[in-house]
Image (cartoon, rainbow, N blue to C red; front, top):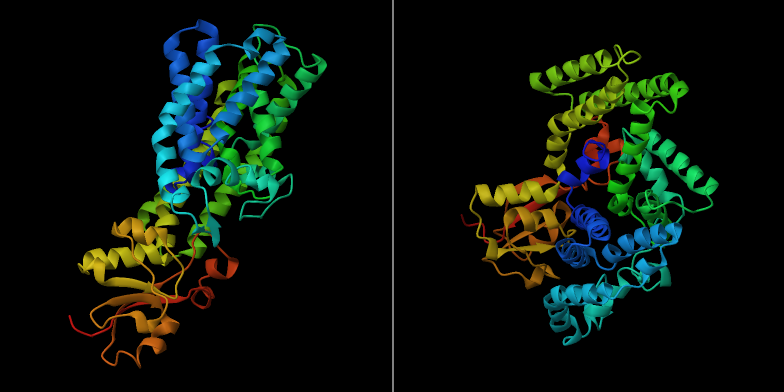
Length: 441
């Protein structure tokens, strides 16, 4: 419940990245490994290493790193040394190797046998090295192309929005869990577990040292963060371990959630003022349910969770109905692909020039559109998708050229205040055009 209602899961459900799948593979691995250590059943052992292989196919060695850190710390805290040296691990490596073999063969054929291909402008001589080393560990050695957001607290700062509405409960859960393990001198009994705490903390320490970080990198351990949060909620609501905290937490979260509801309503109504009656109805009902959810919490403590769920689900429902659909109208890939499909443009004759690459265009049009380097490389029978400013480069070469479509080309993942302001949006939104070079239907 905590994980499903978090902002991160809402985000990666419609802004798909490899981390979406990686998160699932990693928590499946941890679950199956925990079951294997408990029951010693082979189906759990095989499942765990199959899931590790699937995670490594998704995003490399991090799928092996997270479970390894979690269980190694757990067994060290239990002083269970024999679990660190088991012959079954060699069999697990074999399972991983067999499942990774087809992908490795593909990387070898695509890059190692054809050295010099460019990725991010750099020649790649070994696809295997790039995938298993440079793309991951190269972020520490400096070999990786990307170098952004390298400060240690970057991922934590972004958790304040990506783990809403549970972030403050999680921070309490994290601090209390860390305090307990400290006073126990990093030692736990066989009935206790350190998998979730160690898995989250150690993974964070590793990722935070990278020279290149993005907010969604920490999503891989959000299932562990959700378990820590749920455990704290159980202690708080069911076992009543922190009775004096309920009123301050209600006041604080009531304030935070009120701000979220106001911000969601203002963002949508101000940014895209022409909203349907359905959206207004959702907003009014959502706010009403939110206010009513605070009733009788002091008497029925389990109702404490209702404002969290109503806010997490309700705010995202508002954004998904009144904000994101309208926002995507300004993304070139979606708009151009819709025009191409609607008018049955022959995709093989459409080329790109002088414009940023759009994965959304290739995806929604179900075709890879190649780039050409110069207007003189085009044939009269072709069509070109380019920026509006490039029209003057084609007019002298193709006098009969005709603009058949014009649209917006704004990167919707990089929102700016001038774009969100309807009065200044037009100045912030470049235009793209599709040109029929021979002007014929």
